[in-house]
Image (tube, chains in turn cyan, orange):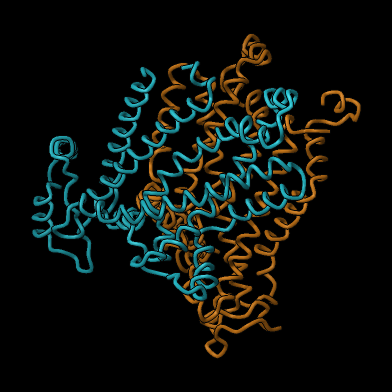
Length: 306
Length: 314
């Protein structure tokens, strides 16, 4: 319990530093959010700056920003899209990214873990070689190649699958495949590595000596410790997935968070970037916390060390 | 392991090279990479490869022919030449960014691990925070903020060397990109190097060097660095594909390599936009790119098996 409190405090600290860093980094960028097609006259620019409170000193803005978040839960307005609050934009885009990321992650787990177990079980034989070849290929084929390929191969020929847009129930299938493939490949490699190590450890030898069958050894004895590296990978990967992927979202025109990350930065939409980084940071810290708890549950040695 | 070394009478590096050459996928990948680098950097010099920027509107999106081995793109430019020139930029950015992250990671990790104690704790906390930053935001912020200084640097170079601006500017225009990518790739390396250094600084030969009156800098350079080379080489080889992937992703979304340069990422983007009409425009650059990444991964895995004594079975 004390360990948990310590980790939560550490996480809060990391998020705080992250947000501070972002705040000053984006303001140090050349240019400003009001650079549009036309150059605005100076007096209009000054009015805009004072409207959004950007004319105050950096530290004053910084203090005001935290006060608004902590006291009112107010992330500020979007500087580029007039009259829209950052919290609205995030709330609107998050469900799409959450759904897409969750299904992609599910795909990665359902494909990756069995593939890794199979490869470890047949180590250095044909299934292992083929599966790991597939895994390396999965890592090497980037999502921006996979996405168009999926569109012309499956999207145009399988009825019901849509290649773009976000309106019917099957629209999530192709983007989730494009997003999940790389993660499935990583999960498969990590599972294989963890399982190979677990299968060559002493407790598996003991289990074999007392007469446990191969499937019982694989599922009951080896899996638990073999999955440790996978769990450590999945936490941060999941947080990254559900905050959106710019490439996949662009290719399939998914209205998700990934687009906001890039557009907000290139448009210098200060409040939006800060809001997004805050969400991302909180999710990453949460994911790492859950991973720590899971690891302690899976591995008694970690539990006793804490 | 030690005995077999002694009986063969070869050094660690010779032993590693022997093991690498016996690993067929890794050796083949190495040959493939050499050929790819040669093709991208040397082949375009010969006149038999057409100019990648010659537009021929009478020959748009053609298939393979003797005149255009890989056909032409939507403006009638020779596809093979474009892929080779694109590969030049991709490989260049990949290796330059890796070098940047190599030096940053090596320096940071060594100092952190060697200093130990509170310095180490704080330096590693900083790495943790940087790890939590969303990658894409940082790359954009970084490349935008160093664009201006880099442009000034280009003018300075042109002014002081008298080189032709048109020939220098496109190459120097890549500098913000690989600095930005390299500035992010070093985090993992810093962690690896730190862990190794922590173990190495407790070794007796470091103590011996200290007692002989050697300074910290000399110890780091002469005694710690050579012993770090194994894991660093392995990690670096495995980092190159990741960094090339980042470059092409950025180019794909229009933030990386900009005209007049083109990389595999921008070619894939152009191909993806026109894949319904001419899928080969997507397939060729994608094939070159994926095969190069594949070869880099196999080579990295092979190097790890060859240099990591734990995995040595013979």
